[in-house]
Length: 209
Image (cartoon, rainbow, N blue to C red; front, top):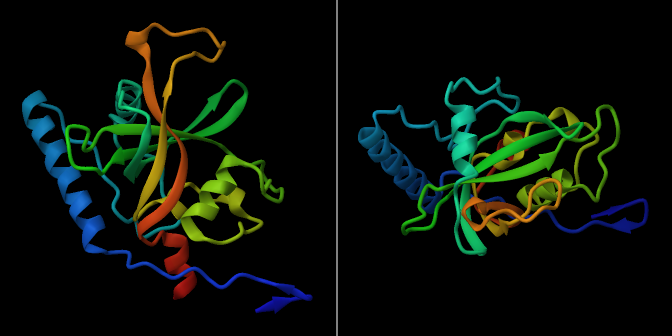
């Protein structure tokens, strides 16, 4: 396909949103969370396998902040992990609007279901998306497409939920002032997404209708 003399790459193949691998990962996560809830007496956190709406209401869970804090207690070896979208939360940090996206590890083993934070600085309103931003990169990895001009209107779950990703995870060893943290305060977070390996996000399903 060409546009004004420019050849565009072919559309990426659509993956099945309800692939057996993705469904099995969500089932394992739910089972683990219910076991934790039974042991602690706390209601299990909500897993969002695939919301139907592209723009969802704010988190209904009263434990959202607690879940976010628990994600900062996750410490795994740096490397690549399979993850699934869990939740999102918009915060104002250091004068910026930041989406704190939370993924859950989907790999079998002791870290199954462990939460990982993926901070994404929100796009500036009513402006074309900056192609170098982490928000746009995440959208491109999740969809294989260039971002729409109104991407700033969209929550991360619009292009991240309902999918399994391969993510690069790194260890945070310094605080926001670049001061070294004690080893007991180190934690893991998603550095960036590498590829979508299962499922289709709501934005692609909407486009296919």
